[in-house]
Length: 164
Image (cartoon, one colour):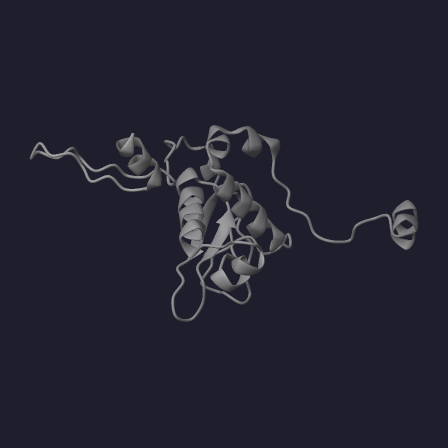
């Protein structure tokens, strides 16, 4: 009765929600994620209905609508979540559809549209496994030159320093 009254008065939300256990949020794998990877968890969670874990996709057309501005940033965030064990890939994408993912703190649900995805009764729990922190945003530095000459100066900041 109370929930019906709340719904009638417009106080109760009727949408779905993403249950993320606090153990996941406190885990070293989650805490080591970049801001973009954490944002991707929320964007994938926005597509989660409670019955479609394993059928979560992140195609560029959808993610662009959610505010993503770079395909490279999106791919690095996906790679980071896979490495940290927050998500697992349930189907490889290609010409006939996008790659599909599942949150590892929930069991994979049966996907009637994709019979090749096997449902599970227990979550894989890959988020618990220790994963070394990877710096996907870090720039790679080239090795020092053996010729004795200095590396070329690139960028306005370096030009100003040389001019002084």
